[in-house]
Length: 109
Ligand SMILES: N=c1c2ncn([C@@H]3O[C@H](COP(=O)(O)OP(=O)(O)OP(=O)(O)O)[C@@H](O)[C@H]3O)c2ncn1[C@@H]1O[C@H](COP(=O)(O)O)[C@@H](O)[C@H]1O
Image (cartoon, rainbow, N blue to C red):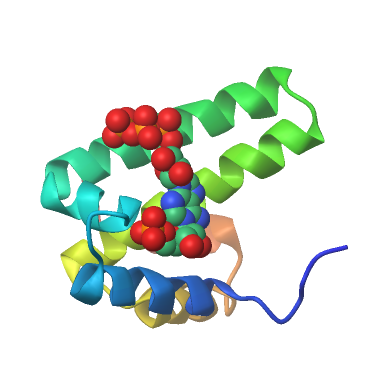
């Protein structure tokens, strides 16, 4: 049964604390010390592992890889100085329209 009292915002706060106060026992601190590019690379690896789990794995594998993915996304957001709240606000803004309407309104590449 999921712990509905634990949110991504709680994990964001833990990550922020480790970035400020983490010592050699902290994976977050060690990853941050390797730089943003390394953290972003790890995020990409976790995304690929989630895709592989989605295609060939069971629900437990998807759950496990998704947890790795979300944690690494929060680390990258923190290193970029982007609050999770900004991402949630963008998602909330998009609820006013369908995904296809949102896609049509995007600026051209
Ligand atoms: N949710 C996570 C979390 N998910 C995944 N990971 C770590 O992410 C790493 C991913 O595994 P990989 O095998 O791909 O990477 P690796 O071989 O360890 O690392 P590289 O050598 O490839 O850089 C593992 O070391 C995991 O432990 C996490 N590390 C930390 N957290 C959370 O962050 C909190 C703070 O952690 P610390 O910073 O370690 O105190 C923890 O209490 C957790 O809540």
